[in-house]
Length: 393
Image (cartoon, rainbow, N blue to C red):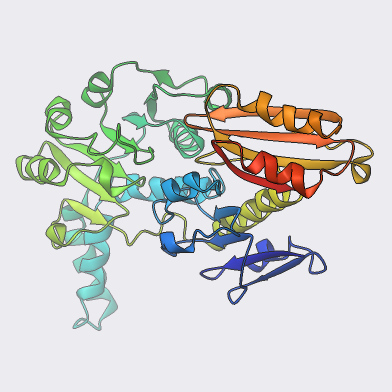
């Protein structure tokens, strides 16, 4: 029986992916093999010896102690792309709110509570509507920074809205490149992109290389009155530099999903309360994707969409019930695989199939064996220097 502890309200469509005869799933589950969560901040003390995996039903993992998990051989999963459509739709909303006098217009119309005569009310609306005139986004240039699951959808949406789209992503994967519409103009220099865009939309994770990426020098390269949209992460934008750019008019509008007290009351800032992925559909998609990834890992050792371990998939033998699979994580140092295989050979255990991959400082191995290894063999492997975790599947 696999045991999974949940935090937050996980969609039933995700929880239903776990067969009840094989899984115990719930908030009160003790000694869990895996944790499934959304925004709950996981304390490092939760990363115990029993834990094998943490799945975040969402893209960001800033609420998970990834370094501690890696050190103890705990695989951390996320669900990139599961909430991409929800974020894309909110970016479209942000583009329109920034371009038209929608918010002040609604505020004006809603405030006229003292007028009860329809004719008088309509005349006032017609007289005052010129105050809320805006611009269309068709024909304007959108610069998309980050062309992954969300960025590529935003680019496609903007093209369909009649915008000219250019993109920047130095780490663009082959898979992401295939998703990208051919009309997107790839820009190799970030300063060139921000200097030639009317709108700039950020779709990047928070890394050392992206933290405060949009800084004073980047704002200096922008056109006067540029609209900056941030539905990625607050830390990507230097707040002090942004404040100066808003004051000078270099940034005409800042639309974000991360409210800050210093921007309260500013007419050139539109803040939303981190609702980019807050749709029923996105929560269901994230929960189902996280559940499927956990099941495949716990039942087969396969890893898909991990933020700290290599992605690895080894098909099970047709006679899988007659073989044992070992999942072994170790530090990515030389001669590890040879030492592991040597232990198996000394025990006269035949290897049917195997796969080994590494990612930065960690390596992961799936090894299918013809017979079940003895406790002494497993102990010998676990005692090899730099082996982190040994699991029998």
